[in-house]
Amino acid sequence: QVHLVESGGGSVQAGGSLRLSCTAFGYMFSRICMGWFRQAPGKEREGVAAMSSSGATSYADSVKGRFTISQDNNKNTLSLQMSSLKPEDTAMYYCAAGRLYSGYPWYSPSRYDYWGQGTQVTVSS
Image (cartoon, rainbow, N blue to C red; front, side, top):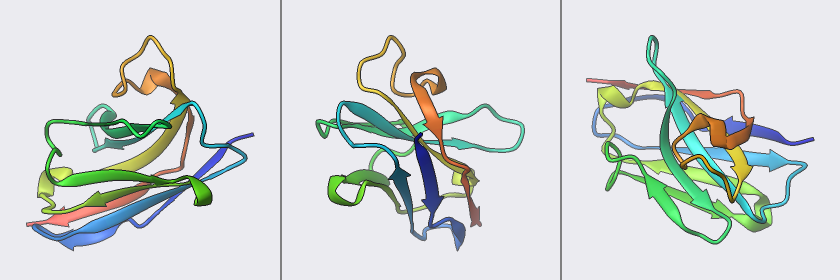
């Protein structure tokens, strides 16, 4: 059984920074793809960033240069460092884990089998 727990969300003013963490329980970081998604009210869940067990990273165009995804295999933790935050970054952020090899692209929720409960990020102008 895989269990993902996010932390680190909160409220911040535009231009500020937050760091999200996701700890995986019952899962070994090998041959998997881990990702961060977000969902704002009334909008579809969208991929923010992803990282494979080999270290390859992918980012949505909207966050490139501002967000950094990283992984600590020893602690089974995935992180998302968010800087230069904008009000449009406001959303519930979710951690997800899925298979390394899939017919779905990294930004498709269908690629991922396990999801955390989400952590809220609110950016005020």
